[in-house]
Length: 83
Image (cartoon, rainbow, N blue to C red; front, top):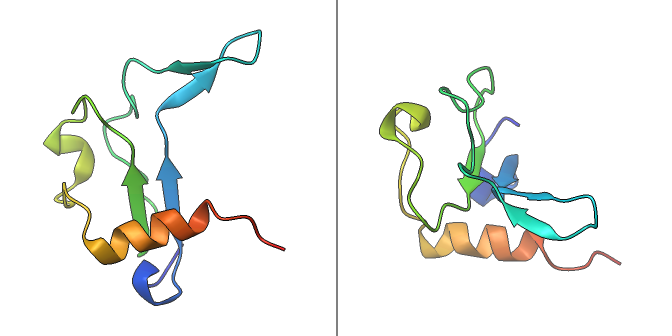
């Protein structure tokens, strides 16, 4: 996951959801229940869906809280079908 995600580097998207036994989407109580997000990853970025602001600063290790327009483009492009 090394490198700048805005320049071809790696990234992870955490949606904060899970699926029940019938395949329905269920929001998790916390988008990431751990205390240190991807602590061994070197470089790259983690984009987290957290509409209810449940993450705490200690989980982010000094990371940013807001997406730039360029970050939004990376996230949006990752959901486009690849043919």
